[in-house]
Length: 631
Image (tube, rainbow, N blue to C red; front, side, top):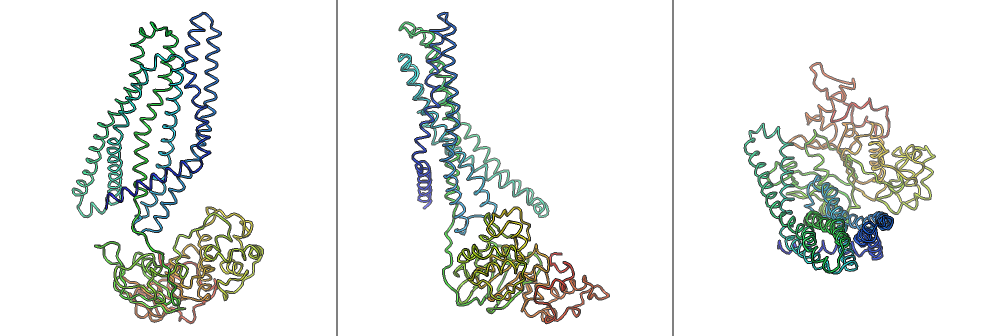
């Protein structure tokens, strides 16, 4: 099974490289043409030096010698221009290869359940893809350079003095054969070294990140032994690579320097056959200035970049896990049910959620409250279908959460995503049918400050985008950007503006189950109240992971997560039943000046009744930002 997987990865890698080379056939033709121009000095070098010596300086005609050297200089100028064009042609081959590879990595990260932790995915997307791109470009460069140089030098020698070919070409091909024969073993050793280096780096990084915990648990000796073992294995891999690298040095000596020794040793024999000193000097020029550097580049390039490309492609293409099937079942409504649901991050880890039974009727507005790290975001991910419970069920409208069609629900995390494009494109991304309507009608929002109501929600009319812009207070942003269809730079937006764009985008989507996972944490209390009021009036089911306790006051029901206890009820019921909730509410009201007992404890009785809490966007109802749960 493992061999089959490796064979599949090799097949995919070869197919990827083949398509990259053949994607633009005329590009290969142009690359070959510019390579011929670059090889002109390789062909003329020996001729120019031989003629400059024999017909110029040795014959007492320095002007002729200088003229031949000038011809060689012009050839080098042509080669310099060609070298620039070659880089552009290689980039035209390599960059689409990089894009396709990156697409595969992103697709694997999004569609497999073992794409790896976030850091691993980021490393694969950035570092490993760039390594593959650079290695592929280097391989094209060195193979192309050696091939054209070898042909140019061989033709140059053949036209200059065919007698030198038996002294030069056999050792060149012998050195090349020796290198190619050692390449598989070199690849295995270098792959082993690369992997050992990665594992050592990961072990040292984990050690550095957990030093305090290691010291607290008295695990210094055990961790030192484990990390030391990684270092020792890397050292042994480096030694093995150094030994096999000697074959690379030997092949370079045989193919690059042995021809020069044979040429010098055979000089008397060549002179007897009419070969002049200038021709011998020209042949040495061919070897030292063209062929030996090209062979050295090939040996170094294939020996390093070739192995790096093979290893990196194996890691990238073989790094995916089991494909995750995207849900395709339409739920019968958006009633949310958790039946004995439990989840833990690992088989031996303590459960974050354990045996949770919860029902959220369709149309309810539920707020989830609890201290940081208690499992609120885990609950949101379970409801959204991003995580699967290790036991129990999470059901939406009679369908398991993981099988629900994505368009039926939406989860907005703390970090909102805004992409390059227009504001209209960002807002209508989850509702493509509104895009054309936005083009015809939504520009008016940039000039309108009307405060429209929130009763039509994500309708399909041309006014839907304009309404969403007004509801979420995006008019100023639209004006500042130059209109709804002007380019939007995400980096120029504040964190709060990005959250408003994400909220409005979700408001316009067809999703009837909305989960806000502290999605308003960068907004002021008034903007947060306005956003939650818009979603509550929109219809469907709304679950809010509360960033401020005021979110709980606006909800129909509150779910309090307090360690092993999970309780739900109305605001008044939770104030009476949950000390944690009463303390959070009492802390807010106490800080606001509306109630603290003399002993310093929360005065739960000072909390206004749920009916007295404003439901709409009324900034006067909030006294600063004193109700943040992380304050």
